Length: 378
Image 1: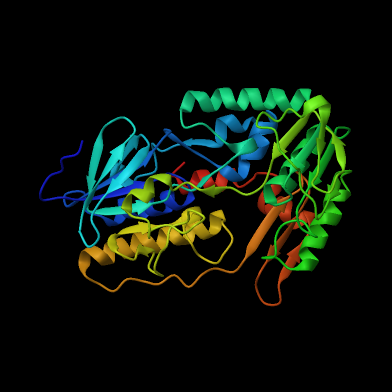
Image 2 (image 1 turned 135 degrees about the vertical axis):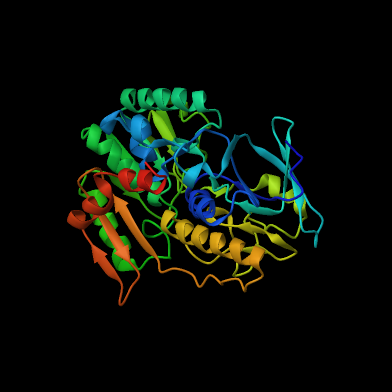
């Protein structure tokens, strides 16, 4: 697999999530297959639609295992692309070089002329899906069983994951006790205005969900099972629970990128990039999505914008034209509260807020699954 034809340039996209899809699909249309080879490397033969992931793992509602795991068979226009099911373990390229080699978990390798890093976030807790496709199915089944049999939940983190998970649990089991513990004075984080965060809290409390602010769980058990059915906060409050769920933020899935050098990643593991999405000492390597160091919230809509710019920049790179800079995107969020509720915020004009009616239309009911499937040619 490591050899490539001398008369072809090889473009490799690592990661088939939002950024990877929106880089690969336009490239499959823009690149002449007689001159360029396009490869997508992803652990599984399908994309997991992450905005649907919490409902998917909580219950069999909407049969999301049938629609939110989307095969890549229609991703490439005119089949101008190849999917390699594998995991990249290292990137081998010297600074200033124009090509490199990827080492894969299988022991194989892939040579590239252009590399796009789009491996997304490495999640813990409820949506920590395994790499193996069959293991994902087992993970979903066992997760649903765990939520069904548990009666008292403590969610360690009141960001988007914690808030949306609480809503999904309450939709299925209104009488089960759910408590969110969050280490800030309001839910979410400071990227969003206090008025919006307050509206989210009001909507969450209206579901009968308890919220502890300015506090955090002292120690979250790895298996979610608290000792003697109790868990303590750092401020000394004792909560009863039979399932403690990690719902704080994810980290960048970039361990393999460190093979390019210590100056490529930040202390938090995000990839340092130029406004063109290129790495500083590697003009032929781009990075996008949740793994990049950029002052914005990590969201699907932004990853889509990243992918579109990178696809255009790769074409310009090959043709010698100037590359486009990314200017950033306004903050926006559609936060579900079960299937019928939610609160949205668009950072446009003076900052626009919308309640349950708008939020369920744009996200809560469908979780965007038909839209995301359409992006992949489905």
